[in-house]
Amino acid sequence: MTRVLVVDDEPQIVRALVINLKARKYEVDAAHDGATALKLAAARQPDVVVLDLGLPDMDGVDVIRGLRGWTRVPILVLSARHSSDEKVEALDAGADDYVTKPFGMDELLARLRAAVRRAEPAGGGEDDVVVETDEFTVDLAAKKVVRAGKDVRLTPTEWHLLEVLVRGGGRLVGQKQLLQEVWGPSYGTETNYLRVYMAQLRRKLEADPSHPKHFITEPGMGYRFEK
Amino acid sequence: MTRVLVVDDEPQIVRALVINLKARKYEVDAAHDGATALKLAAARQPDVVVLDLGLPDMDGVDVIRGLRGWTRVPILVLSARHSSDEKVEALDAGADDYVTKPFGMDELLARLRAAVRRAEPAGGGEDDVVVETDEFTVDLAAKKVVRAGKDVRLTPTEWHLLEVLVRGGGRLVGQKQLLQEVWGPSYGTETNYLRVYMAQLRRKLEADPSHPKHFITEPGMGYRFEK
DNA sequence: CGGGCGCGTCAGGGTTCCGTCAAAGACGGT
DNA sequence: ACCGTCTTTGACGGAACCCTGACGCGCCCG
Image: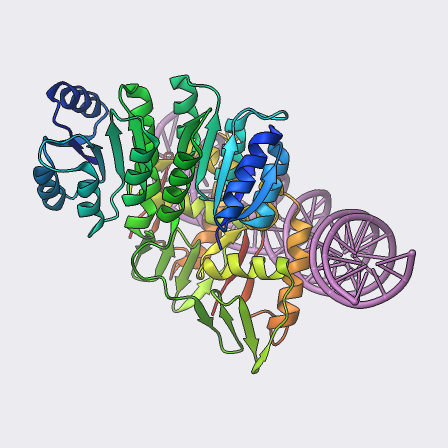
């Protein structure tokens, strides 16, 4: 099911959108200000964001930038402003589409479908969702980890961290990037989270947690997953 | 350079678009009907298509379908029709965006940039920047150095220094520039840092650290990386 | 020929960074 | 409202890293 994050401070607009989206079998989260939007986006990992630029707490364009700092999720901007400059600024900040209020619900939904369709898996070769090591197997699609024939139970945060590392495919992933992708854009410096959760992952997956073979620390830089 | 295919039967609109696009360093092809558009799209492989729906020879939506049959190239639709149905039909047929005439050139260009930006990583894949020498391999994307089949562990400062040198691509890099890029703008004169860390790099990467083959000192000037 | 300068090498000490543990706080379900 | 699970914090020892000063060497220039 496609998950949508709706961000708008006008309750009636939010209500209208939520009703229409849910009727069409979308899963919907809603936020009424920028800070909540950024937090929800990190927590819920929506497939598309519908964002009103007129928010009470911060500039809508800054919300776009906040999102673009760590995700490529499609962003569909709503705004009462018709000015060309506004549109250009939002689009260049990373928005995918710009709709002016008042808008037709049919059109909005069509633009939303277009945005989602676009973001879908590129027609090519990403069936490499299973990664194997000598001690455990990670299935990214099924969200499952198997070790010694048994399923390993991971908490949401543990899984999210593992996912980002494994998707890195042997590349170094900076601690800032890890923090922002797992905990959200505003968590760029709480490196203690990383220490705690890396320890958890190693305890659950490494043969000798104190001498990790697969979750390598690169001091001062970040972590790396190795087969 | 980004290649754009403009499809419109009104000469003045085509002219305006071509002029504006070329001024911004796009490569532009133009077609005035649907059949030509489909042929040109196949022949020239544009990075984005700007398509007017009102064409003399065929329905614009059929052009969209014709393109979508074999390519995911972004399609930006232009149309004089404001009706919601038209928009929905075009978008659901596979268009990426829909702009009604008359349109602001700034806005159109911004939407075009958004469409191109979005499409970039899907088509290209991931480019690993790898530099090889006879004794070691540097992977700039993965932040990894391999020598004799084994990973070499570099500290953040060592890596940063190596990165600046390697990106220099064989050119001489002045000591002031090295210092400022690695240690920050206020460190222009502490050349002893360079001596210490160059020694570290050589010890870790050169076969004979006291007679370096890859990290060359240019006395009084700076350092150079050579394959 | 001798002093100065720039470069390479080495080792110690202060600081930052990481792994680990434990406990309090937040959340959800029964 | 209670309990179990997950997340967030704080504290601490130990390791890794960065800076610093000292020394030796070769080269240029006086």
